[in-house]
Length: 164
Length: 164
Image (cartoon, rainbow over all chains, first blue to last red):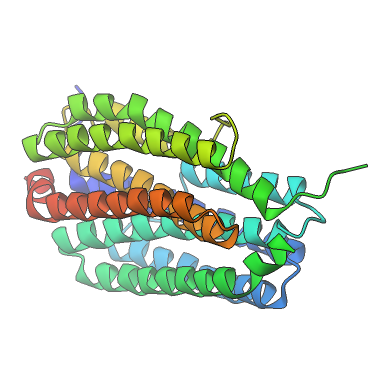
C-alpha cells in the first residue's frame, strides 16, 4: 500500500531540496567572486557568501524544530541554474560582459531561492510551525535584499562597462 | 584568436535561453493542468498556457527587432526546474498535497522567468532596443501577475486541502 503523502511530507521534501541548494551556493559563490572583475560585485558575492552560511544554519534550526535530522536531497533546479552560471564564466572569460552575465546568473539563483523560501514560509504557517516560519521569512528577506542590491549594481555599473 | 564577447552577445544568448524555456513551459503546462485537482488551479494553468504562447511570439518579435532568426538554446535551469515539477507529479499523485506541490513548482518557474525577463529588459534598454525592452517588460508584468495569482490560490485554497 502506498503511503498518502501530506503537506508535512511536502514541507520536509522541499526543506531538503533547499538545504542542498544552499550548500551548492556556498560552494559556487567563491568561484563567482574570483571571476568577477567589478569590486562592488566581488564585495556583494563575498557578503552573500557569509549570509548564505547563516541560511544553512537556519535551515538546520528548522529541521530541529520539526524534529528531524538535517538531510540534503539533490535539487535539479539549482544544479541547472548554477550550470548556466558556470557556462557564463567559461564563455565570457576576459569579456567586458562577464560581470553582467555573473549578475544575471546570481539573480536567477536569488529568484529560485525567493520562490522556495516563500513557499516554505507559507507551508510552515499552515502547519503551525510559527518559529520555523519566522526563520524562513528572515532568510527570504535577505534573499530579496540581495536581489535588489544586485539589480542596483547591474543598472549602475556593470552594464555600462559591458557595452564599452 | 578568440572573439571578445559583448553585452550584445550576452543579450542574444540569454534570449535564446528564454526562448527554449518558454517552449518547454508550453509543453509542460498541459501536464500540470491535467494533474491539478483544484479547479481554480486548473484554470490558472490554462490561462497561463495561453499567455505563454504569446510570450513565445513576443520573443520572436524581439529576435526580429535585433535582426536575427529565432533560435532556442538548451536552458539547463528550466530543465532542472521542470524535472522537479515532474517528480512532484509522480511522487504526490493521489495525495492531498499534490496541488500545493504543483503550485510551488509553477512558482519556481515564474521566478526563473521573472529573473530572466528583468535582466533582458535592462540589457535591451542599455543596448538601445527600446521597443524590445517594452515587449520584455510586458511579459515580465504578466509573469509577476501570474506569480501573485498563484500565491493567492496557494494561500486561500490548496494548502488547507493539503492538510486535511
